[in-house]
Length: 177
Image (cartoon, rainbow, N blue to C red; front, side, top):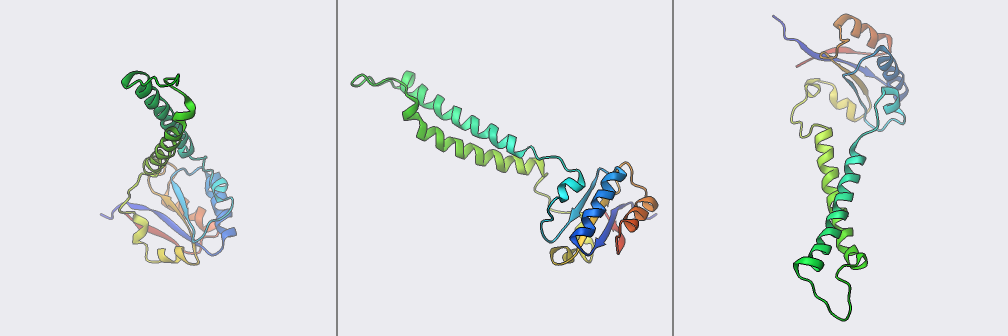
């Protein structure tokens, strides 16, 4: 009994070819697919129908948390933990708490960004079926690929192969899982 394939991979020669193929795959209604390119292709995310990432929002939340943590920490230390009343100095002043708050804003933003990237991108991913494809190294040099996963609800081996060939895919190959 043959194993269920991971999906199909199609090879394209130019950035314009993969851009138009991505539009066709998106318009066909596929949800679980990706493009592999050797260089950034301007507008490919839009052609694929990819939404904006939530990582900037995660970073903002981390930064605000860091800022509030710094201000709260200095307020707590100066007002309650160890108050020093010297020469009419106020127990809390945002001006004196700003350096610590600024540093914690940067630190928490960095941690939130890294954590958000790992979670959103499902990292670390130590294995991917595409790496078994014998010509995948060309995707780092001069070829473009579209990969459609078999677990996509619209995936039908014959229909998906026909779509990729109609989109201009030169070599449409099954990927083993």
